[in-house]
Length: 496
Image (tube, rainbow, N blue to C red; front, side, top):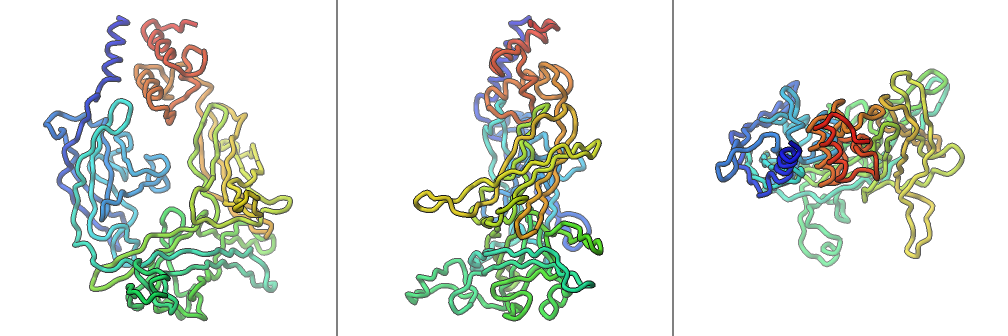
């Protein structure tokens, strides 16, 4: 019996030993919701066979979405419930009937209608991939596109950037008037005469008199983005005289040296990221982003639009999805790897820094407030630490109760008095541990053997309990635990 069991197990590991190339997806359709309530969506038909006509196992399939010039589309867990973090690969386990990610289509929270954020210009496509039992990608289909229009031949605007961020704490101008606002410094791609330019421009070309593309100002506009690619709306109340109706693309020709949107600064009048409630009057300013702000330039002519990249500045670190979860601990991580990052230089003094708050969800009692020093220190050319840092830190929260659900967030406190909160995330810890329940399904089955082997082959512990996987209770998780687990499934008893 055991010999047969190991033979079956060997087949599981050896399956897909030869690369499998899935056939191409078919029947692509695209619906754009435009100004309607709802979402745009792409539908398609998955292949049932590989390129040689052999049947495919749907549970080993996944897909990627591509836009325009073979650019993979990134999905993130802030918008899509069935994924973890940010990914371009949508696996079988993410598909759910009636959800945004399905086996025959994808819903999008963004649209290509005028006035909305454009996430592709002329085509959108699908590529199928097939997995082996190590959950590595064996083979991929061709990218099959739905052609919405012809590629734009317009010049691409040069990349803009956010150059600085100033956020004022609410204060009392007089007893009946509270001042709250923040400002962003920015630059579009200009030459020295403030002409907007395409991405072929360099200062050297201008100085040497070499040709480069100058864009017609009346055809140039730009948008601001916050956090997870959320587009910012300019309103007449915020920008009187410069905006007549709510818009998401600000016209270059409306930039006014004396206006709220000037050549180098955008004033967010009445908006702030300060979240403390003022003691007097109970006024609370609502944050409109949590960790970054970005900018993108457009050039529109004859119904076509070209766009620069979205260039972000990370103002405050993003609190990442939870990792390294055990029955009594988890890792909270808000480290920042971005190149274009605001340098923090005002974490000086008592009571300043990153404060990690952990709350027991059931009781709403705070179980931890931890002051965590910023990481990612900047040094000069000879190795001396400079008096500012790139935002970022992490902390392992320990001593928690198995099975409980915890909420946690990071409060950023600076010596200017400003206080900003990250998003609030949630984690449910596994129970005290069911020996052999590797996949944390609350029972022990052959699926746990597969999960354990997958971990030993890949080293990826996502979605499993390493505590439960130490089946022989010796030397951590090794191949010996596979033998111990199989012995248990055959006999119903643990050897020790």
